[in-house]
Image 1 (cartoon, helix red, strand yellow):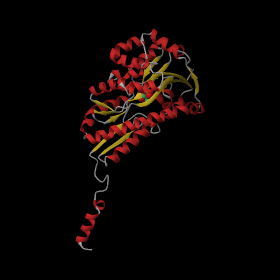
Image 2 (tube, rainbow, N blue to C red):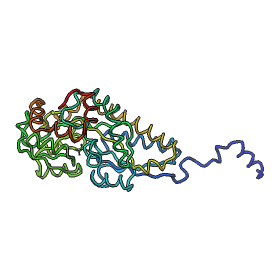
Image 3 (cartoon, rainbow, N blue to C red):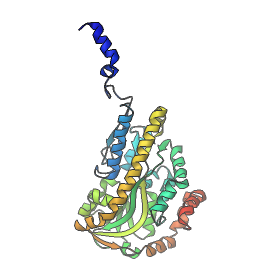
Image 4 (tube, protein in one colour):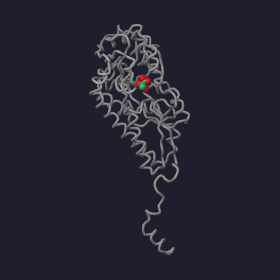
Length: 333
Ligand code: X2X
C-alpha cells in the first residue's frame, strides 16, 4: 500500500480520521452542587440534562455534579455559586431568599391551592419577577423552576391536627426568614438548620419535628427518625436552577441555548416525576412506619392572620410582587 493510496482512502472516508468525539478536553468544565440524595428525581433529571449537554456540545461543555451536600450545606453552596467557586446550584426558593428576599414569595403560607396555580404563577409573571431579582444578584435563573413539593410536618412525639398542637414544638426549618416567621407565628419554636444537618438533629432529638415535602422525607429517610406525618400543605416549595452570572455570560450563545433547553426540559420531566411519585408515596411511607393524619388548614391560617404574618410579609415583598401572587391565588391579606 503506497502512501498515496492511504491518503486517497482517508480523503474518501473523512470519518475515519476525524478526531473521535470527546477526544479533546472540554472547553468549559463546570461544577453543579445540590443538597439531595442521588435517588431524588431532581438529581436523576439533572444528570440526564448534563449528559445531553455533553453529548450535544460534542464534549465542549462538561458539568460535574456534586450531590448530597458533598460541597457543603445550602449556605455554603449559595456563597460558592455567587463567588464562582461552583457554577451551578439548585437552592430552594426559601434558601435563595437569604440573598434575594422576594424569592420566598411562593412560600407564603397556604397561598397555592393546587399545582395548576403553582405553575401558572411560577411559569408566568410572578416567576419572571423573581428571576429578574435573581439576575440583579449576578446570578442567572433558568426559566423553569423544579418541584420540591408541598411541605408537610413530621414529628417524633405527636400528630399535628391544628395549630394548637404546634405550641412550643421544637421544629427544624430551613435557613429561611420566612419559615422562621411563619412557625413563630404558629406558636412553635423554630430552629434554622441546613438540610445537611436535619437527619442527625432529629436522631439526637435536638429538635422534635421538621417540615418537608413527602419525596424528601422518603429519599432522605427521615421516616427513620420521625413517627408522625401531618398533611398540612402549608408551603409550596420549588428549586431555582441557578448559574453564576459570569459563568453564564462566558458561554457562547449556542451553548447558552443548549443548556437552557436541556435544564428546562429536564425540569418539566422532574415536575412530572414528582406528580407521579405523590400518588403512592403516602402508602410507602406508612409501610415504613410513619403514621399519617390530615391537618385542618383553617386553624393555621387563622393563627397566622392573628399573628400579623400576612400583613408583615405583604409589606416585605412589596405591593407589586404581592399583587402578582394574588392575581393567581386570590386575596391573601
Ligand atoms: O432544607 C430543606 O428542608 C429542603 C431540602 O426542603 C430545602 O432545600 C429547602
